[in-house]
Length: 257
Image 1 (cartoon, one colour):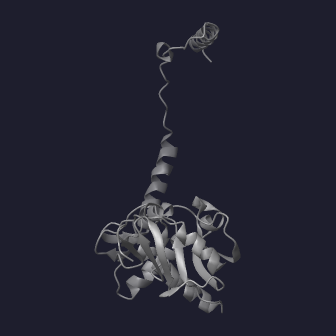
Image 2: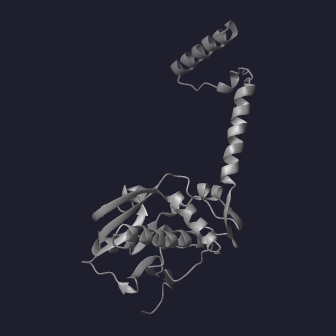
Image 3: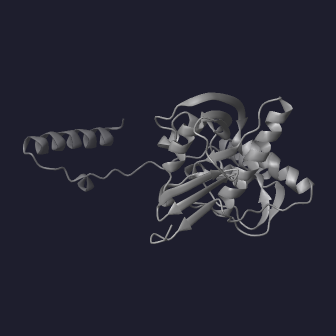
């Protein structure tokens, strides 16, 4: 510390003690220190620029095409519907190859979908923005009575993303009826759903106080699942698209039932 800086530090400490004793506040704006300009290491900057260029080349790789911008919002949206539906298809393919029972539906949290998918070329970078966390796929077994508890927690403004295997009928803001594969949920039956480890470990309180029968951790990163699925779609000549459907149906508050 040079002499000037030492004097400023001593004055600052003295002022703080004095004002504390007088039960008054210090006006920090009165104490001003000219910062020393940061010297940039040319070699370090060159290396940083090089790594940035390499990262851009990777994230800008085009893997598909999206004809219309897909956004994510409650209680359902084109992007959340697309992601939950592809997760069911991927999970069933995964389970089939391992001689495991197929899943009945999938569940994602809206908070985990961090960005929209803009119209045009779909790049790797888009999915790093949509799914920036290292969340992984988990297959869950749950009893029907517990599943009903989970789904009845979802309100219009606090819903979570579900695949089109489920139909949620709301009366106003609250759940009125729930159908799974077109039928009412059997309280005694064991159902299987695909989700992410964040939810299973208590994220967003979605499964708070809910008894799960079993969990199967795949260790497959969700972002990689999305990316590989889109690549597969593109290879088969399909575009990336999602739409609003009847998985969430809202009756007016004064509807006659």
